[in-house]
Image (cartoon, rainbow, N blue to C red; front, side, top):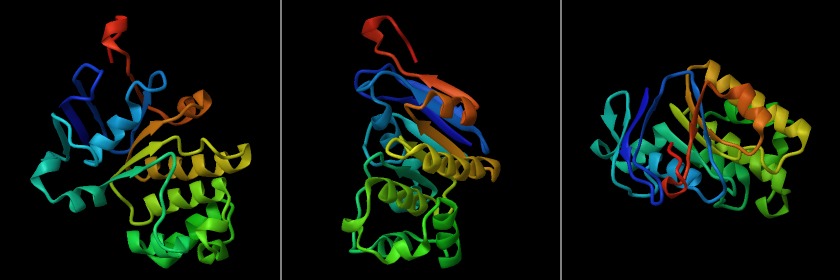
Length: 201
């Protein structure tokens, strides 16, 4: 169970909500409202007031690295370290068998893991970033536009992998511009709105 209490994101009212194991929360709202900032705060990448709990343990009760192993943020524009994707993914954790299977599940030849990242397309890097985020099986997966740069076929494969994480009991929070994807994946929705505009989350 992921629980957020009185989390303060600039420009938004304090946010309180919870997402259970095996549930997907869609975070919606206009561009620039704070969707990505909310995901980063939950992952403890940005220090903001408020509390975030995983199974009753608050994020500041444990080392940041321990929290981030359990609560994983996958950025819309992922960064890479090391010359190849394999280097970055294996460093993040997970077995070789799992890494190569997920790579195949996303329509990629596992040999791509050893190609220089600089030679990969945007879509290939985005799919491999999803592999990296899921490789060590984090409890909570925070996805920021996970299929935004993918063609329809590749997006469908990525969506199926995300659905599998939900069915496996993991908690997913999703920011997506794809309304159909939200309809297919999300159990819950959080609508972010500027209070100055008369709305509320």
